Image 1 (cartoon, rainbow, N blue to C red):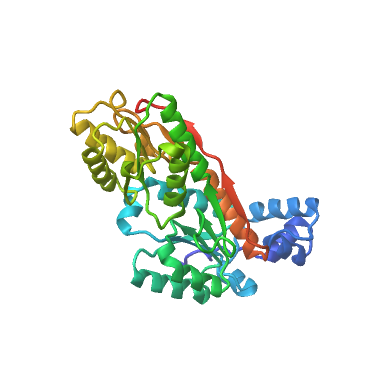
Image 2 (cartoon, one colour):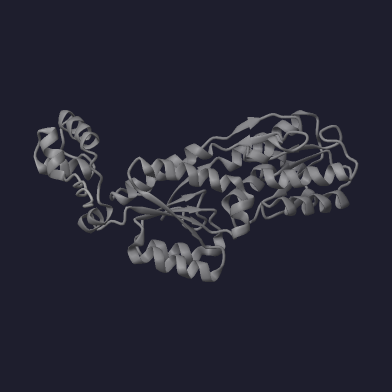
Length: 338
């Protein structure tokens, strides 16, 4: 039996005929809608749906010299990707925002030197149109320098330390958020407030520590400071160190929720009650904040909006605009831990 002939794939000409416009008008719509009247734009979009026309991404990339993809460049270890749900939230939000422009998101891990080298080669070879740089450490300056030197459009999540004037970014207000948390803990009557600070080579770790120190002012005591790497295990280790050096502390502000969860684990294991004996505050409002016992008081970061703004700014840079920076406010979320 002879199989039926394959259905012909709709073409731009089919769309033009269905919309009653020229082939050039359809082409302009497919490439951004510039210089197209609202009526023609509506007609073409309706015809695209009616005919079932789909853009041939390979042909379009050849015509526009674009890859129609963007890199989600994560400069962290593979373990952190799966432990910290914030990365998944950012990646999902970026993918959704890019899908509205028919652009794919490519995850690239660059947690060690070999991965950074391969990432640099891939990105600068033109396989992506731009980069969403997530969790940038100051120790990764070589990677960032090469992206900038190659004129690859890029937007960072958080302030790219050392490159603030060369790369756009979207960041939460880490400094003011930390100050608000410390102010809140102090308002509860807590006077011996410790902190588990984040990595010194990240903008979040640095600015949240500065906010903590500045809010305490003259009461700041460096012996009430321990550091972690944002993991739950590092939060537990830092809390253990703090209890050994300052056993009568009555509050702790952890620079992210995973470390705060680790701190709660240690406090409860030591026989201390949370928040009766020690109040605990975090930062992020990650899913783990609702899974700790007691629930974690924290500073909410608008991760979905951060990812949307990163995509918006990146697409503008890809289109030739100058990089821009946005700082978004955080909000105090009160739960049972403080």
